[in-house]
Amino acid sequence: MSSIILDYDLPPQRIAQFPARQRDRSRLLVFDRTSGAILHKRFHHLDQFLKPGDCLVINQTKVFPARLYGEKKDTGGKVEILLLKKVKGEIWESLMRPAQRVKINTQIRFPGQTVEATVLSERPQGIKVISFSKDKQAKNWIKKIGRVPLPPYIRRAARSLDQERYQTVYAKNYGSVAAPTAGLHFTRPLLRKLKMKGIHIVPLTLHIGLGTFQPIRSQNPEIHKPHPENYEIPLISAQQINQLKKNGNRIIAVGTSTVRALESAWDGKNVSPLKNSTDLFIHPPYSFNVIDGLITNFHLPHSTLLLLVAAFIREQKLLDLYQIAIKKKYRFYSYGDAMFII
Image (cartoon, rainbow, N blue to C red; front, side, top):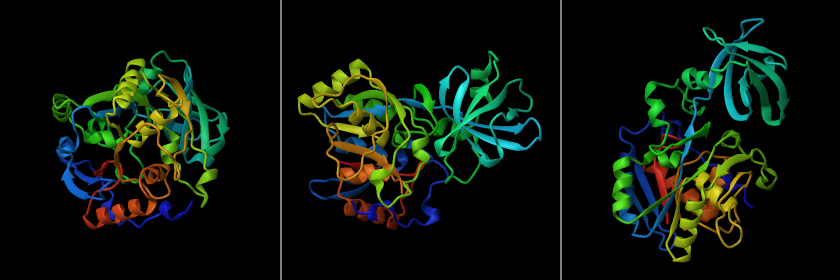
């Protein structure tokens, strides 16, 4: 596979630092894979490109306030913690900064709080396993004082607006350290409008984890191994997707995380109702089994998400679309604009 898809030049001013004033007023680049047509719209025009019977599959994961700030108990040195995944009880996988200065058995306190954390072990990819003290309020405390884990390319501290805007309006199940950004553009009125038109809105959950922050460092993507992420497809969702697909209706994924869940659950004939984990890495060449369309944001160079979209359309075409988006001054990444590929 050519490595050309791994990179492109993006002017820094094209990286969105704040969300659009209104979710569904973000821009929408529509690309028709059959005709090659390219249209420039707003996200609230989405219904113009959907038809009765279409199935939009959404990811109901909810971002939890995974960023914590503490200090080493012995020296007072500042420590930033990004919680990744709960292992069991009060034991979590995490990333820390400065990682090299936080060793095994380091105790971390949080000023003004009774809960403390201890570093238990280290794992590959810079992961540190930590345990919170046996405080009955630890879980609630994390949600109370933890901060929204904005991605590093948003070069500002999290603000109160991020508590709402770095979350989809249909978020339901806590578990992600990053938002399923394609879903950030939907509003409740837009969802009602789509349902009234006969569009099926079908939920699943995939909790986005460390893989979102892992760039592909090799020129050979084949050797890249994504961090596993947990997902769940309810029985009723699987049944609805399978029936609609059997009837010839279009299955349209909202976001790359939704695609990974659907493709991971494909058993060769149907989407299976599963509660499982997946490290599926979709890249060219890949034959999609489930989806007919994809709503997605613009992704980082050297990212697995970029390669997933490249697998859905020709690699060079994706690069061409990105160059058009840059020229047209689209906003990129988590708080940026969207693409609809049909």
